[in-house]
Length: 578
Image (cartoon, rainbow, N blue to C red):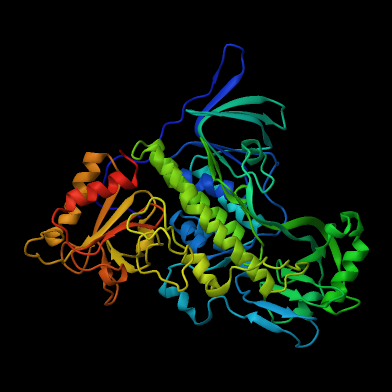
């Protein structure tokens, strides 16, 4: 999709070639080094690639995840993948489970016992009012290959089977030593910035000495993959996302992989009571699954086992000099609700445009400090909500201590957490710094610090969402039909629009300006009788500035005496261009 009225530089940097130093060691120069090739690292690669930022990703494992886990992709994550052009591939990869909805809780799958905690993710289709996208059930082992394909197509240098041995950070960059686990070759990587997406036990975070807040470990499970041809008949037409089986002698969580014969079962594990992994023999796992489901002679063939740990921790800082934490290296949270992976992917999206802006020269270094200011409070609020959801769902193995799992209260709505969170502080202007990160009510009316509203519009004959406009530049929306206002002038005859075009050139900032309305000057025409200004919480003659990540940076509620001066001050402050 082409964007009109964009001026200023593209957020691109040039990759510097590898060279050998006098000792013969190979040195690889790159703007960004990403460590970790799972969901968050690969998403970082895709988002950087979309913005034209050269980067190298290293991952110690030989390939992507082979275990079906981390399957829930919420609506905000899917919006980001939509804008990045990845959503269609993910939907295809997720086709097998596209008909599965809801969470079932029952003591047995035999008969009609139990209750649905919820039966539809989007009952009644009301989500379409807020978003052009929707939730998607796609397991990590199916999603990661889609991300790899797109990351490589966008020029990402992805090096699997490559291990980070050491790194040192200084005032101008990071020097890392990486090793090919296949050939044994050592390479020195010199990067302007390093993104640590190296998991919950992050060696990078440990070396930086960054501690955690939060209660720590919550519970432990053993994830068992198995085949059973007879289980589909027992499940019948109850196509759930997950089924919590509550038999006190054999509780657990059952997840479908293909609704036919491949399944996953999470068994409670209690290492705090001295229980070892070796005790989870095939015989024990088979017997536990049969008892939990309620069919003593069910055919069960174990195909794999993997332990996992649920925790509630958030790093005390997301940045140390030239190094940034993202995903599980920055935060851990209960898997209930799939908040962890979604929060990590959204970390990557927030950081990518800021790195692109600084590397591209159109923002100051101070913009990167807002990554911690924005994303860490979101993780703190979200991790509390994830633990609360585990309590509500009676997740197998979770017996919370007093005070653990709180944080629900008025923020209980999952859509509030997934879509309605805000940035009270950061690269935003006009916010209340003391306001809640997750408001009591879902409010997507264009307030600064919130995700910009979705509105269906027509652009150059194409029907799109306004969310499709936000990725590669700042975007200014203003009124195409605003009448002249005596004594003001701003907003009349496209003054906001003209100011944006002049400032994009003058300040060398990628800034796209769209006039919204029904008249001949309009670049975007709202569908139906929607009032763009009302949707965005402003008035005719006002303007809304949206960041490349789709969050509202600032808005003018109405005309101002000097649109260019006002917008210049906003851009200077927002982008730390002092």
